[in-house]
Structure formats: structure tokens, C-alpha cells
Length: 521
Image 1: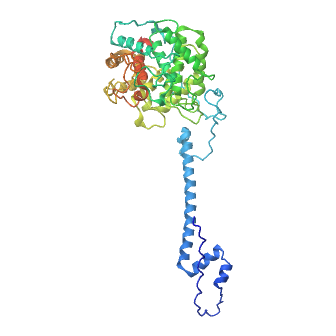
Image 2 (image 1 turned 30 degrees about the vertical axis):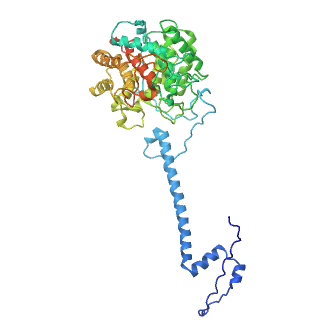
Image 3 (image 1 turned 90 degrees about the vertical axis):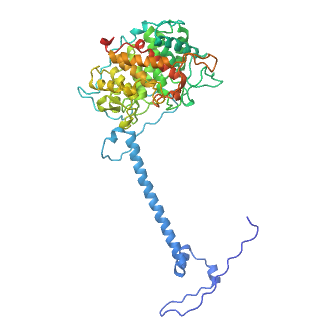
């Protein structure tokens, strides 16, 4: 700022005198008097308006400013009304079906303090969304498939000794299981991501992206691979590794039954990892009858039941209220966990399957023979991956093998354009995982032909050479990005362990589960 005092404003010059009009009042104010009696804002505005065009500009500008402010406020209020309408419609799928509806407040349940380690409430919302009761013969009426013989084939173990003979699929399994066994960490867990020095770096390259960090998910997938060939924590070549992996899962489980190794609300991996780990605990319990696993397995099942979406019967990344919606990808894993729990003779209420059937209704297209990821997705988002998953869920929930939509869906999935192909943008081990189970349940020439094709493709692309040095171990695994598969596959994000586990689970399909339709055994 300058140190000089401000310069006084110059005095206004005396106006020239002129004759006043007849009957007018003459007012004379000197410049000195004007300085002594400063005019108010309105007086000054009136004087400027009557003495110069500049006053007109000031007045016009002020009025325009006022009008602009008022118009902006009105526009913002209208935008807020429109936004509220959009949000309410998005939160409440049933509201979207109404052509006209009064704007009413939406009551959203408060998120409890703490994280997932806080036990979930077992009671529903105070005023849950009312669901129409299924009519007799309604598609939502379900009768879950028989599951007592689900694990009968696990007793037909393959030879896991080094250098075992057999077809290409058996050789690939032996090599892949050995690779998976070498990746277990000292604490009994496996990892998807590259890790860090404090957690222990992965022995293998091309791991998952940091956003998919979940040791629960990795450990569950590894255990499912070993359990899939009849190995257990009480017997077999990999007995010790399976026991240490199961012990790690049980130690990781929270008081509310959650098996996910993170407390972060809504993390993408949460319910994938928890459902997969639930399947592993239920399978281990069913195969051995080890009573030490009954309680952790049942609590894991209960966490899924408590997390099921009140509105549409699906699951997604976190337990929420009846104003939210699930997705088919997570729901498929959750339903598989509940189906496995039934086979292990754990407590699973039939209402969970009825609600899940309602969710499948919401994501189906073309009468139920094709499926999409979420109910809000357009028709063009139908995919073979979601269709295979959706139809397999229908089999678990009681659809007969000759259901018209089942027949059409199978024809869609085995179209030559979806033939197993290990090439850029087309490989999809996620899709093949569900398709193999779906077709195995149906049996026949379609299953035999398709499985022979996928076995050959997988076996031909396994890494059968390479060292086992720390950080470079690839022998017996599959590369996640050579080529980069379909976006639905997620191989480029979930990494080498995920792709390897999925390939092994596909090869194990005839061993893992007995066919749902007994005549196809």
C-alpha cells in the first residue's frame, strides 16, 4: 500500500443558471453544502438518473442482476426436484414401473457405527418394501434341486503323484495343483496381488491389481481347487496345506460370520471372497464331517442370509436395505454357497431361494433363456457369461432340464461364436466355469463335445516350462494377459492365481459335483 495520503476528490462545478419553468420550485444547493450533507444511495441513484445517461445504465444493470439471481434460484430448485426424482427412482426399482407418482420422502436406514466387524442386524427394515406373494405356478415358486449326492464323485480321486499318466486334462491338473501348492504363504493363506515386503511378496509374476487385494478370495480359490479333487484337511497329498488354509480362514472370520479380510464398507471383493470362502468351509465340512467346522460354516452362511437384499433377493458388495439392488455375478457365488450349505446339511431357509428366484426374474430377458448383470442394464448387456450363470442358478432352484428357456439358453451358449477360444478378447474362463457346470448337469452329446473342446484349449495353453524361483514361478499356471481375455473374464485385473484357479476348477468339473439330473450320471 502507498504511504501517501489520499488525494481529495475535486469539488463539483457550479451548474449554469437557467430560467425555471412557470410554477416550478427552484432548489439551489452549493457544492460545500452537498459535501456536508452526503446523499443516500437512493438519492444518489435518483440524481444520477435525472442528470445523465450513466444513471440509466446503473439502474438497468441492478435490475438485470436481480432478475438473473432470481432466475438462477428458480432453475436450481427445479434441478433439485428433477435430481430427487431420479435418485428416488434409482433407489426404488418398483417406483420406475409407475408412470406417475407423487414425490414422497425416502426413508433410508442409517448405517450403524463401526464396520463389518459389527454384527449385522437380523431384523428387517422397520417398513420393508412390500412384495407380492407368489401365485400358484408362479416362476418364483422354487424347489431347490436335490443335493445329498452332490459330492459323490470326490471319492474317485485322480493320481496326484509326480509323472502321473492319464489324458491331457489329468496331466494339467497334476501340474496346476503343484503350482498352487507352492504359492501358499507361511501363515497358511494365498494372495491375489503382488503383496509387499511386510506381507510377503508373491512367488509368481503377473498378480492382481491392488484394487483386488483379498487374501480371503485367493485362499478360498486355492482350497476349492484342492477340495475339488477329493483332497481334504484330514487326508491326501495336500492335507497339511488344506488344513493351514482352513485354519487361516477361521482365524480371519469376524464375530458376525464375515470371512472377508477387509473391514472396508462396500469393497468390490467383499462378497465374492466371502461366498467363495463359505463354499470352501461347507465343502470341507461335508467331505469330512469335522464338527470343528460346523459353527464357522454355519455363521458364514448366516452372514450371507443376513446380507441378502430385501428388495430383489440378490447380493452385491455390501449388506444394504430394501432400497438397493444386487448383481448376478455376486449373486451366483452366494447361491452356490447356499446350495453347498444344503448339501452339507446346514440350516438354510427356503425363503432365501425364493427371494433369489425373484432376483433372477428381474435380470432375465427373452422369457428367461438369457441374462444380464443387473436389472437396470439394457437388453444389449445380455452376455453368455451372465446367461450361463443365470441358468445354472435356475437349475439349483428347481428348473427341469426340459424347461423351454433352458433349452433355448443352451442353444445360445453353444453357438459356434462362443466356442472356447484362447485368443484376444475371446478367452473367458469365468464364462467357461459356469457353462461347464451347466452342461455337465444336463449331460449328453452337447456336454461331451463342449467339455472336450474346453479341456483341449486349457491344456494347450498351460505353462509347462519355466523356473520356480521366487517371484518367477510360472510352471503349471496360466498367464492372465497373454492374450488379454474378454472384459467379463477379469483375468487382467485378478491376475495369474485367479486365472489358474478357474482353469483348474473347469478341468475338475466332472469330479467336483454330481449332475443335478440323476439320469445324466
